[in-house]
Image (cartoon, rainbow, N blue to C red):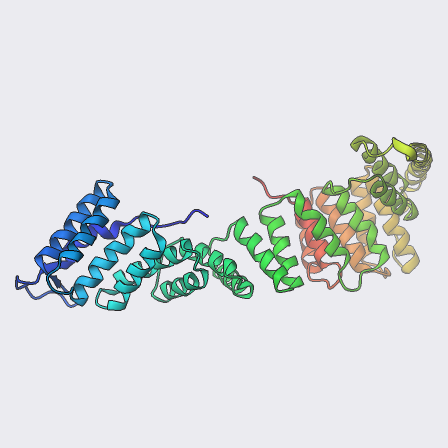
Length: 416
């Protein structure tokens, strides 16, 4: 992956902290101590800084290594910290990751540099460990950088990948969920990693929730089949809900087989909605999956049948449209709902919605399903404000909740 790394500006900031050991320094401020080094060390560090500025990281590293080799006496802890810190950053830039890890660990262990420097070295150490494929160590360095107050925007994404590549899938999921809870930026790749992590730890609810979020924020047709199948596997699912799920599949163009269209047309026909059944068949013909192959004759027979039934139903609905809707009892409420849905399907939108509204206020066998159908109709009619409370109330339904939320995604696609 591409690392979101801050530039190695630290090399250019070394000089102000250094003072020759043999030169007495003025009393420094408590927050900015002067760290003394020998003249030859200071000269080597400055030369390395200048070479780095000139784009010569390799020569800068060679200059430091030569200076270390030529020291007459061992480096002091302060000199060690500066030399190894600078070497570590240069080695990281030169993609010599194991050597960079060693140098940075040595500099940190000296424990003499200011807190800001320790933080920067810890961030660099995380990057070096990651690139060296020491993923558990990268996780540990990343966590330490976070504890030290890192504001590096690349820390959280890199820590996510370090957790994942270390095969700590529970840690990966926990870390990304923490980022989400804090409203930190989380991109599509992060969410895909989260979804995969949930599958590895066999957390079905977490996986479904993440896949739903992916479809909502980064919609792709590839996500629909899995989500739709999960909607049908919700606890308490009843066969009567199949028509709503197939309608949703049609709405998101997730029906690729002739049988998909035939099943939905049959469900609509059995529900007393021949105009909808005909529209489904016509959609199958338009997509090119009906009217060919060994089933072509059967497809045409079904098409002819529903063409006639739809015409008869349209005539009956038009003739009876003056009758007011009623929901005095379960039977009349059910009939009113069917009539409203049928009216909606033949283009009598407002009249259909009027009937459906009366029906959902009556004693229906399954009020939640009727409310979902009414909400979908309202949304399709452009009355989003009226649909929103219904969608909201149904979104937590133990059986229809997921399908409700998927309908919302389908009817309110994210704009690019």
